[in-house]
Amino acid sequence: MSLPLLQSNVPGIPVRRGKVRDVYDLGDRLVVVATDRISAFDWVLPTGIPDKGRMLTQLTLFWLDYLKVPNHFISTDVAAMGPAFAAHAAELNGRSMLVRKANVVPFECVVRGYLAGSGWKEYRKHSTVCGIGLPTGLTECQQLPSAIFTPSTKAESGHDENISYEMMLQGTGEKLGAELRDKSLDVYRRGSAYAATRGIMLADTKFEWGQLADGSLILIDEVLTPDSSRFWPKESYQPGKNPPSFDKQFVRDWLETTSWDKNSPPPSLPADVVDKTRAKYIEAYEKLTGKTFE
Ligand SMILES: Nc1ncnc2c1ncn2[C@@H]1O[C@H](COP(=O)(O)OP(=O)(O)OP(=O)(O)O)[C@@H](O)[C@H]1O
Ligand SMILES: [Mg+2]
Image (cartoon, rainbow, N blue to C red; front, side, top):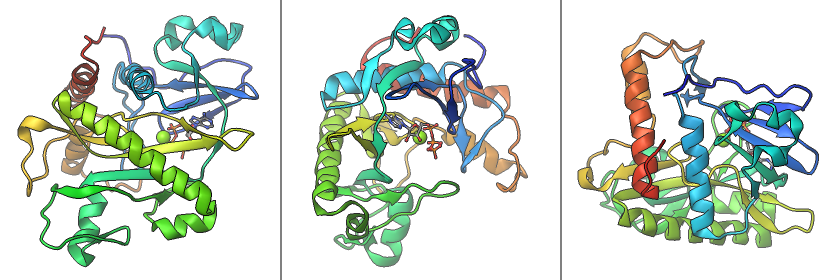
């Protein structure tokens, strides 16, 4: 196991650091480097999860190949990114993608197949999720009659906010909005059908789409990873109970046991929480791809 990469460093190239990814700007292309940073409750933690960035990148590549949906991917070859990147190949290999730069659609395209998280909270109060009326009497984590599209805003800072499809249309217009909804639902349905054959339930997920200069839509960012989705192991699923998930649950649970107030820099993670979290990411990767993570 290698040391976690908390920040990449490629001198001379403009970079924007998100919570997890360092995004280098090459003009009409980007190099997206997935670091080993982990965030929880909208904070980046001071401790990294070794190899997490590699797993997220490899899983996204796996899905893009499986789904065959138009997307931003160009190459994983560090040499193709230019000499500044090639000089740091050891650090960047496996976690970096050369992609087409797109105009990011300013909405998160969330698809839910099950009633969990903020969807369950809203349903309990109003029998709706993002304003979509649902049958009464559903329990927590129950499968919805069919998957629903529940967009949210992309907040520059702080929490993204759930909005109705109609509110999204005010920003995107009818045509682009319908395309975002239909394509997101299609990718979710195909992805979750495949995941089910591998023992993983895809409860919900968030896609990001971008537009090229000609207006065509491409799938960008990460795709169907534990960071962008809620994965549940099929064997422990039981409607009415929130199943353990393949993601940062250990981290969130542990943080809840500390005195951290979620309004100040978070504490470092103990080694066993790091190990368990890393094992969860590996398990998700291996189950979905059928490959062994090296
Ligand atoms: N092909 C692309 N074209 C333009 N932007 C992209 C593309 N692919 C990914 N991005 C952007 O790169 C960033 C990835 O970084 P990361 O996921 O760490 O950010 P984040 O913390 O989730 O979000 P943000 O910093 O945007 O609030 C996101 O802002 C995403 O929208
Ligand atoms: Mg992101």
